[in-house]
Image 1 (cartoon, helix red, strand yellow):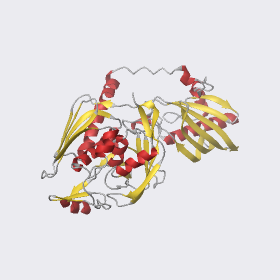
Image 2: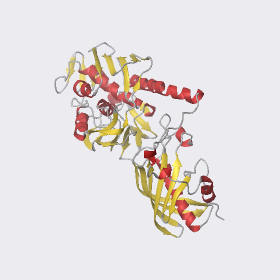
Image 3: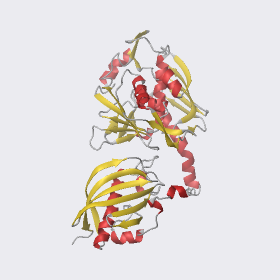
Image 4: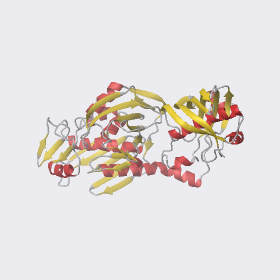
Length: 452
């Protein structure tokens, strides 16, 4: 089984967004295993992230847009196609505007970024998904069929409503074919579409420098076509980017006739449904799977394997927190200014219902809360009082380094740096299997849970 991959170092590129026309700098950053592909808006307070999953698609008019709340990222398909084409499983795409730079309308510049950064193998295996049964989709003029196959293959027919420039190509998608046969194909449009696009607030950054325009039988471009069938190759590029939103590498044969971003994303949803179907059936009718055995070597020196010093019953005598907000199950170390708590993260946590459906991840802010509760246990034990709450005052130098998933055991390591009266300042580190997942400097105040 092949390992997951990320890029070797951070790399950046600046340019204009195709539809927004905004000046933007994009930085690709490495990410730990199981992170997946994510977009991060560094121009917005809190630097919100949007996972590249089809559940986050909000618009498919001439490009694919991802949204989370009021935060949007437009035209994500070319970047995603590049990362997928090079078989990059984990990366963060940072943007200081709402759309990646369009460059020359192809993925050529993005390929240069990835090759400049290098590709690094990671210690966890890739989780490819093989299509198990045919999936068919009819959406307007678009017809898409996904069939089982041993490789990822796309056979595409590209044509407009008047059957102009009808082109066909079938290709097995791998890093070599991606780089040579697909990545250089530029985006294109028909001349009669331009007025509509402009009236709808699109292609503000568009020009013949980053798009090919077809007018009747003529092709308007600043350079000769890069392939005789460049248009269908770009359609396949878009398909790769949109199907990346499934969240797993695919093995299957997609047959596409007149595809669009809307039909591509709908196919991604149908594939995601097929992936999740066995798990849903097992949850509904089957017994719970046995807990995986942890090899002794994985526990050696791990705080999670330490004997319990204070159990949950004793913790609840000190902390007033209760379900669903008690975020520490046991204390395993309580020495001087040092305390270590353990939180067993299970799929039954209520926050997994909405964070996120189909891809459960423990919210980072709850990891901060767990740090405060464990630090509060130390302060409360010191003063030998009960029924008090550790109230957050501030959190600084906060870093979330990798996601926390159901089944993980969160080790919450707290070192008290300062304490004065009821106010404490501590360094908190959360780990899973010895790997740091988050850290912060937290300041908190101990107060009575039921003040008079």
